[in-house]
Amino acid sequence: MGFTIEAFQNKFLTPGQTRVDGILTVTAPDDLAATAGGPLVVGFILDKSGSMAGDRINSVRRAVTRAIEMLDASAWFFVVAFDGGSTIVVPEMQASPQAKRDAAKALADVKAAGGTAMSTGLAEARKIFDRAPDAIRQAIFLTDGKNESDEKGAVGDELKRCEGLFECDCWGVGTDWRVGEVQQIAEALLGKAALIPEPAGMDAAFGEAISKAAAKSVRDVRLRLWSPQGSRPVFVKQVNPTIEELTDKARVVSPLVREYMTGAWAKGESRDFHVAFEVRAGAADEEMLACRPSMVYLAPTADGWSEVEDKAPQGRVFANWTNDPSLSSRIDKHVAHYTGQNDLAKAIVEGLELRERGDEAGATQLLGRAVKIAHESKNAEMTQRLQRVVDVVDASTGTIRLKREVKKAAAMDLQLESRTTKRVARGGQPPKAGA
Image (tube, rainbow, N blue to C red; front, side, top):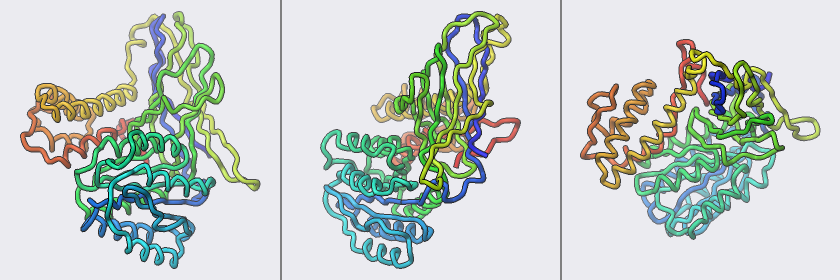
């Protein structure tokens, strides 16, 4: 049993209409072996700049030591630290009891001092990950400050070298770091950025990260889209469990085939993708195939690794032209739901930006729209986060008042989590969520 793909769409278009949208729900098989994707390599990329002194560096030492203790003996790990440059604190080693003790001793000697140059830590980790081409490679990145010691564009240039080599989840400690800087790293490396308000929260965050990494069973998974002559992709984005723009990351396999890297997956994990295609204009009662999706990944063989492609007929996206307005006017609930979740994220980010600039009227309008969308989509988690920034008068109409006093951590958390989506319910019950 391989990956399954299910398509949700309204395939009916009015004659002459050329845009087709669909939601692809992709689920990994439950019977993947734990070693199907190769050994796990976890790299810790840690900020040790001067602002980390005191409780923060002490908490980092403790949290990373405990996270390493959680690793299975078959896993590998390493630790790099950065300030104005980078240092290998613990070279790559297998997680034996002795290696874990050696790592704890090395971490105890880490001191906080100097500036912050994030690109140097990423570059050091890249060199180490590059020596493990047959592994599931996961980085855990932590900072507490602004990237003030790097040359302009250095992080972006380094991320281009890192893309496709490893994945990276990111955390910012406290509130003195820039959300955009940390999000840039997470989004480029197929990870998630999150806030740790206080140093005491590092243990839980790193423990969760290790559990997530250890669950991965297959690596280098790609969504492959074949579209025939007369159909071309407009955009491709992951829409659950988080919104991730994939369009510009396409790898052209052939004139009709494009691939989109999605990273490593756990067994049974499920994700949703929104795909849109521009098709040639058709006449009434004409039908055409707009897209045939498949999932491509690497599997172990006796001679090494081979590429496997799982095709699913039920995942195909069609265009069917009709003169019946009762068919063409329908909006598929899955497409509508994720369009709304994307609008929710956009309204939150833009609303918070206007609030920072002092445009209260604009911020009220956009954050009110966000409250309304969150209410309509029954996204209780996002509603709760919004309520830390606004006073909700009527959620159904999006009537709100901006709070006069808002904790910086609440606004940062709302912005960071704006890309986390709630899955649409099907048949009265929500399906299995993404891992």
